[in-house]
Length: 133
Image 1 (cartoon, rainbow, N blue to C red):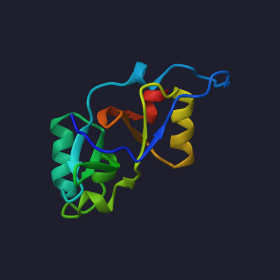
Image 2: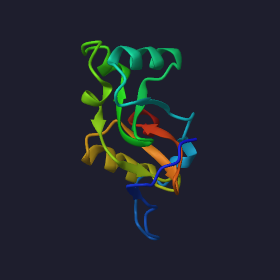
Image 3: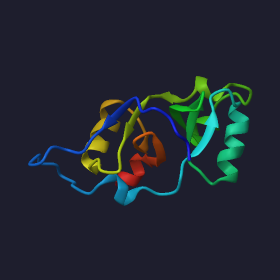
């Protein structure tokens, strides 16, 4: 597991808040994320994604998540380019208690395909837009 100080955490909705989907991120969270450093080349990161059968990679810099990149994007860029140049930069994170509707809204507002899931300073995993249905 990766330990890091959280930048922004979307907490659970206040009691009484009406959301379309009250299920929690923790209910759909799957395997631990596949992490690559921001300086990895696109070719190296694509290889890691292929070996781990991961469609999305969490990009790490100095031990902290700084963004994410999909293997779909990596397959279209020059092989020698660093992943950090092609990632969707974001320090936003959610907790397992965050509702799926809140996570969807956050992804939509910030044009993100993925969000890291944390509990305090502990990285639990990553959710994708497709995980949210």
